[in-house]
Image 1 (cartoon, helix red, strand yellow):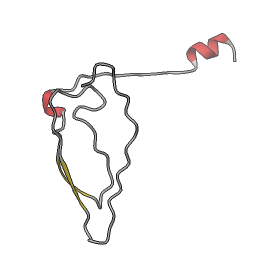
Image 2 (cartoon, rainbow, N blue to C red):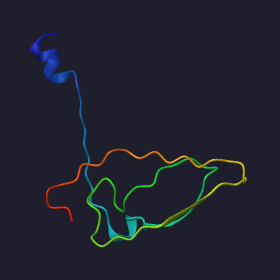
Image 3 (cartoon, rainbow, N blue to C red):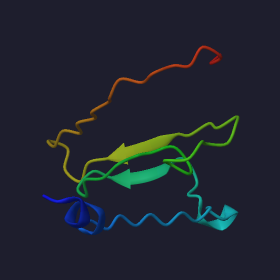
Length: 81
């Protein structure tokens, strides 16, 4: 690949727009386990507001169904309390 192709062969576009307060989802609520999904912190992937107390109630539609929660390892910063 020559330099000209390398310089003009790729396009990378990144658009950033700050979240407005009304766009940040509330934390906590009720979820139906028949619809797979993700639970994230408010404003994810941005920093979340301080003093959050998020509580989720997850229900399965049938008593014999399982609810599986997968957690990933978190890196705690040195100033976390």
